[in-house]
Image 1 (cartoon, rainbow, N blue to C red):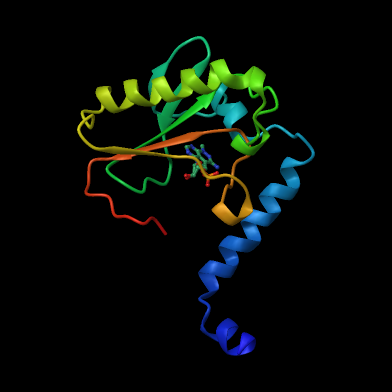
Image 2: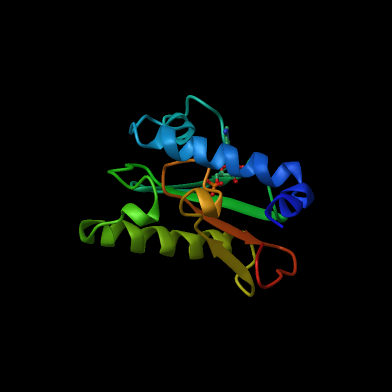
Length: 144
Ligand code: TR5
């Protein structure tokens, strides 16, 4: 039964699993991510909102007409939500509030979704905490 199941698995799902696991493994080293270069403006991005502690920019591979990533400028150990500690409470609140500001700026306050992918089984690919703000189309539930 197990092998029949694997036969029916699409290759894209196993590719996704493999790259998610690879990303998680490299995150263990604490190495900088692509988002550090975006924060340092070494790589251009389409910035929607910025303040002293938070940066919000358009996702390069949008999953909805509005797809913006909200990140802390200082990662401070927050590679993923599952690594959060009590001391991160303030920045976590600021990120969530910035998501609301983004939704307002983008004109989707009446309906938007905020997503955090945590770890390989949620397909997290960049190990610098980020909120996805998605909207501009009808969302479905449950998500995939
Ligand atoms: O999969 P998770 O939840 O970790 O989300 C990471 C997100 O970062 C994905 O939605 C990617 O599309 C997005 N991403 C990856 C890169 C990138 C980006 N968004 C904007 N600009 C980007 N650059 C320049 N390079 C990326 N590798």
